[in-house]
View 1 (tube, rainbow, N blue to C red):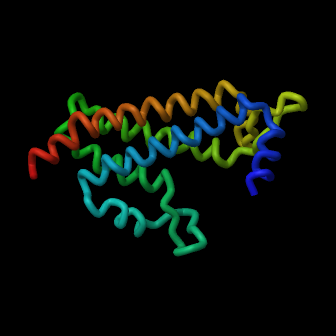
View 2 (cartoon, rainbow, N blue to C red; view 1 turned 90 degrees about the vertical axis):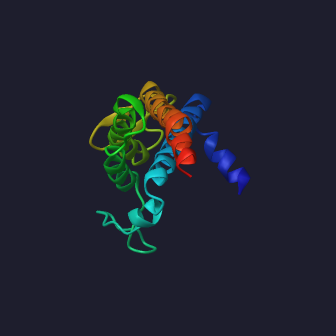
Length: 165
């Protein structure tokens, strides 16, 4: 299987593959950081959001645990935060929710949609082409939001939880 994956990857320029990979890793890190922050407010967060209705049911259990579901529930929890300064958690949660829309366009775009030999673009039916710089910008925005949540988690939320216990 690895040979097939490598062969497929060799069809595209390395900077394009790197940008796509970085965007994916940055997004996943952001999504899980949001979940970890939410769990400090609601220990049953993951079970609760799995029970929420979604617009596109998944094949396994008629539910999908999507970024939009996570973001909506997290924004509600973060708006109640009294621990982090300057409403930073609520702002980061809202930014995460905004990025979900971009994430959806990114992950549902057609890969390698540029003209040969420059295939390093994505194509979205409603928005057109995403150039390499736009893919990298999405990764940067996801990383910035993830870093903010990480900072709030380790410097405010988790220490406050440890003091309570």
